[in-house]
Image 1: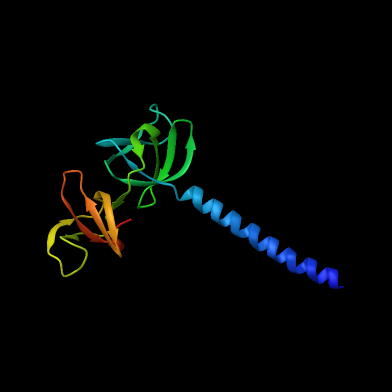
Image 2: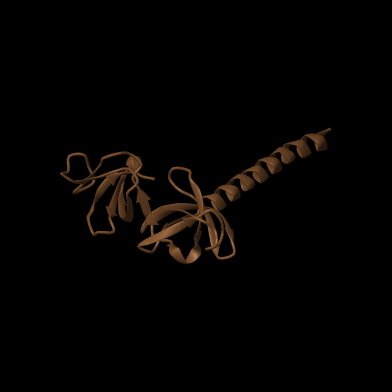
Length: 153
């Protein structure tokens, strides 16, 4: 009887640890974030240049890797849209994209700081730094500023 209780207690611990390992390993593979490293890149319906182009993405556009096939990456963007892109067109530069319309980009990390410019929904930025809930960003045209993290993906 005593042996059975101990075995049951350890069985639950083993099951819990295995479940956590599966959960975190699946999340890690899905959560690989890359960004577009060229001025623009074609997103395709399949893993090859013979597949039709769906749309183009700008430099610094962040993407989440879903899977890989040879030299091609199947990804999901901030809207949940999926497509294929060649691995030579992406890199590991940290980036964000605005998810709200007319986001204020400020001179410093805080709502009391001056608004330098506004960004429409879907504008990608390179991440320069972070301070609390504020992200220091730079657009491909060189404009820099700070944006609160709830406005970006």
